[in-house]
Length: 297
Length: 220
Ligand SMILES: Nc1ncnc2c1ncn2[C@@H]1O[C@H](COP(=O)(O)OP(=O)(O)OP(=O)(O)O)[C@@H](O)[C@H]1O
Ligand SMILES: [Mg+2]
Image (cartoon, rainbow over the protein chains, first blue to last red):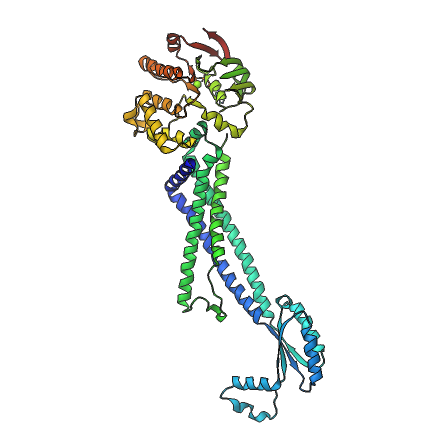
């Protein structure tokens, strides 16, 4: 439609005229989104590490040397019927010794004086994530210890939880910092648009008097704010991506190698799109604040 | 075309700009609103295109009660009216062309049609050769004619002219009045506010005289 084209033209003229104010808007939004993005990338990667750990997390149940075949079968049955258990593997004394020897490759002599096999048979349990809280694990371990034929239970990975809660704190911190910076961006954009509105006050007045609708008068400013916000967020994404690649290069890593657990990635495309949209929304909202107050019928 | 019933307008601090005005202007008429400075002429025009609301009374314009018009219907009303403002309201940092183009952009007219319209109207007011100049460099009379051309951009049914001969000398004043007469002859209802009684007398059109906000005489 014709009017749409005129509105777009007006928005572009506004942007061209906004000069330093416009650049300040774009810059503030970019800085805010870079900081927000850094938090997002860090929490995303730490989150992936924690998830990986949780995935690999296992409880080891050491069995008594004198355990009978019936006892073992019963223990296995009792454990498998537990809802916390996702998978279970059995390692016999012999298998455990073999794998221990493999690990000691070249230093097998250390084992020579031991005579009979000192390593206990064991069950390795994978635990559903929901049961990986310290409280649930403690209860689960207590249950396992009481079973006949069980010597000892090993899990003690409370630090997984600590990292997980650190990620939560970091996420919250990032969100608050992002929110504060978002507010600052909003004010700066709204101020830039206010100046643009003042600069065009006469023109707006004439448009109003010759029958322009409020929407028509507002739209170019709204668009100007959205474009500024979108550009700011886009610039932030470029900066973040550059910094991300540079960091990888510095650390001599390829994507996916960070922390050695196959994570280490940039923002998800969905998050990147969300950031662009958020930038445009901040711009639109900042613009509405300024333009809304200015107009009368 | 225009009907006013017991219209009062009181601005803040008890300034009675209009008092009990009753008025009926037919479609196709040419009417002068005459009166000294401060009589309420501009106020009357602003009530008609709903730039102001009356304190009380009803105003019908082209069959619609503008007092009860919802906000969203106001643009439609204004698009059917051309207004020549007392202070012209031209954008000084834009060319004559841009000043007129503003109207067709608001109306959403395609630019080819709009440009043709600008060219035709500038020819009508005799300013075709100055299309790329800014109002800043035009004489008062030329600015006046740009304001007239802009008021005609929307092919109005009703033309409201507020002191269109403001600071012009007698000859130029008569030129402008002739132009408004031509526009009226083509079917547009024209209402002219002026304190220039010489012009009013010379033209012998229907005249409504305001004094201190009251309608004091009407002739012929
Ligand atoms: N926006 C306003 N606020 C307060 N008072 C106003 C306003 N506009 C006009 N007035 C007052 O209303 C009265 C009528 O003003 P108006 O502009 O209608 O007169 P006018 O006949 O057009 O005068 P002029 O010939 O000088 O243009 C004056 O006393 C003026 O001071
Ligand atoms: Mg006046």
